Amino acid sequence: MLKERSELTAINIVNAVLAAILFISPWIFGFSEMQAASWNAWVCGIAIAILALAAIKELQAWEEWANAALGLWTAVAPWLLGFAGVATALWIHVGIGLAVAVLAAVELWLLHSNPPTKAA
Image 1 (cartoon, one colour):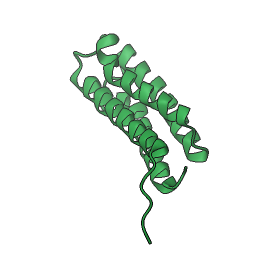
Image 2 (cartoon, one colour; image 1 turned 135 degrees about the vertical axis):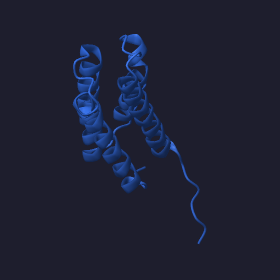
Image 3 (cartoon, rainbow, N blue to C red; image 1 turned 90 degrees about the horizontal axis):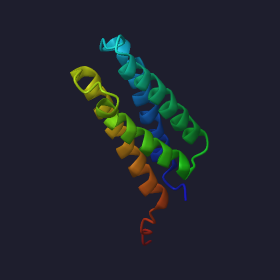
């Protein structure tokens, strides 16, 4: 099942880096005074990082489903939480959220796909 362990580990490392960027983005990109945007970045960043690091240690499909959901939430949060008018916060959340969701989907596909065996 874990034939692609190095690819799966790499995907989770990328997710952890994206989570770190999301977490520090309010300070780096100057929207730390916006409570909804900042708190969403901090909470989602921590949650995505925890799931990514847990998946590096021992991969479980539920971790990727949770990361996919967190990625989608992060991407739509600007509209649901009312900070879509702040371009920097909007694009950080949408970009990182979609990236996390896509990486989780790729990882789920890799976990559940049965690649053809190579003929000798």
